[in-house]
Image (cartoon, rainbow, N blue to C red; front, side, top):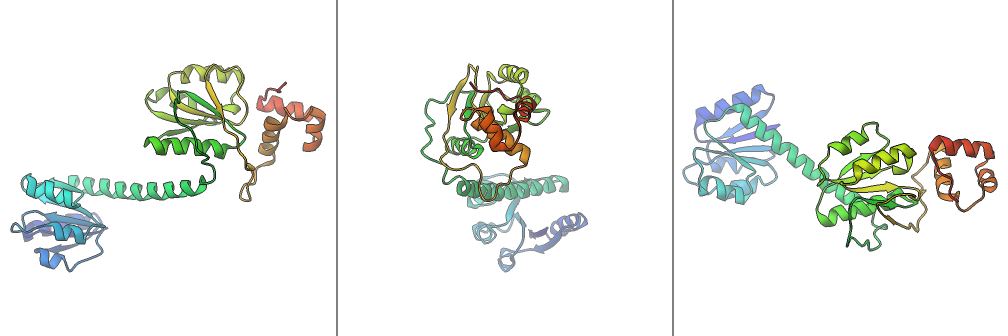
Length: 295
């Protein structure tokens, strides 16, 4: 990591540079703001506020894309509040341990990386779901809320746009994971949860799930209709085919999807014929996936 140290106390600047260099960083030092303004392309700038009462705003603006950490002898409006308002990221009071300085640097580096990642993920999801948002109504939502649809993407978009509108991050839980129930139990009742693959649970598991979810603030996704459920359920209709040019499902997943979503439309004889399997095989697959035959 390239670090610029702007400090008029030469011994202090050299001491900091030596310790950071030993940790694998590349350091340069400046003793004046004039020299510092000639520099560029540093990831981190350590800026002393003891530079003969100079206005620090120009240097902070010059390095607006860097992590600027103030090194202050005392806390005041001029040494901390104004520079932070101008764009500095943090401050550390002299004298300080180099470990504390490194902790602050690592913290802000992680923050900036995650912020950029979050922005790009949001752009990608806005693009991915741009055709799925058909004016979702988020009024009078009560939790837990079960959502059914033939399209997982449709449910994903509903939860995403709710989260975006409410500015509330959700915790994602996949019921295929062995520790899913434990994770749900350990989460706070105020934490927004998005739980998928409810339709994969067996009968007894669904009963257990109902107990642990009853006081949770959760969206629960299912790709089949939900029967014998006392919780509020909504259905999202998808006008687009679930299979896109980029989706190639494993054969077993394809068969499972067809059985779940079309068994109420075709008798077993016709459904098994369309799948290219026998009625006995169709019965075996229902048993394997714990699919209840719709009447």
